[in-house]
Image (cartoon, rainbow, N blue to C red; front, side, top):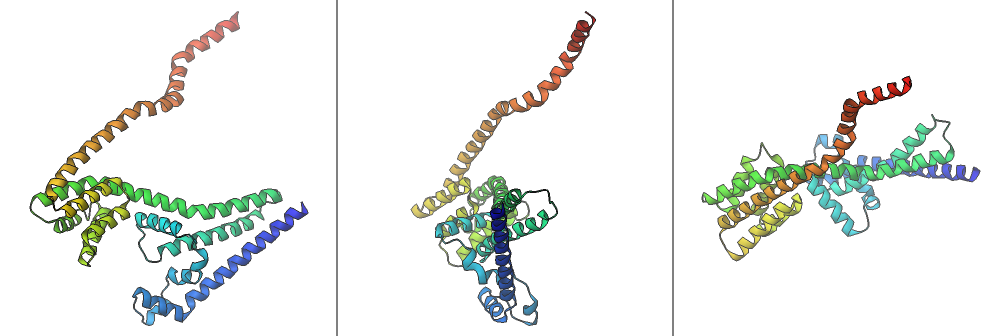
Length: 307
């Protein structure tokens, strides 16, 4: 018991020391005028009288970025892709994400340790388990939040894609080129489906900046992460490569996409019967049996009492 207590105290002391060192390093990095000027020069921000009072989390993250970022490039690229699909496109989004994970993994155990002091009935083993659990929660909480934001945004893009496809087909068949058609669709969807409108506007911005059209379209598919958009991008890239009619290709893809949507709807409708079994068995049938058979059971019990 004494050994467990000593290890627990040493672990808490180490966590508090690391937290204090990290906080002091972040504060010194944020208040250092040289680092602030370098950050302003690299990000293109104006340097003026108010620059010394401006607060940017990047100034806090940059000094400790090499300590919080994962060493594997595959993991960094995977997380960067998740951040992009969730809508976080800033240059320092990856550093900020892992910095938040590091801060939570240290701050939550420290706060938990402080809160445990108000519960003296907890044993040392239970206290250690709670502190370690809070550290795991601090590590996993940013991932859960990121996945939630990413799934919601992908759902909005999935809902907006059929309208965008129909508008794109109409614009191309009316005589517009692919670039002007994408720009027009982006303007039309700016209010109703702002997420997809921003992605389409970004495609035009990349093309205007000199990026090749197939590359810009592939970047659109990577940022959205939807299979439907990947299929459309693959079709457009092949059309551009072989010089075939974009209008005919979009018309064929639109018809196939409608068929897929109808099949998906029929599949979901066919699953309703199976999904309704559990609510019926757990909620409806017990209530029905109580109402229908309950009076008969009560009379049956009263008849046995009188015998």
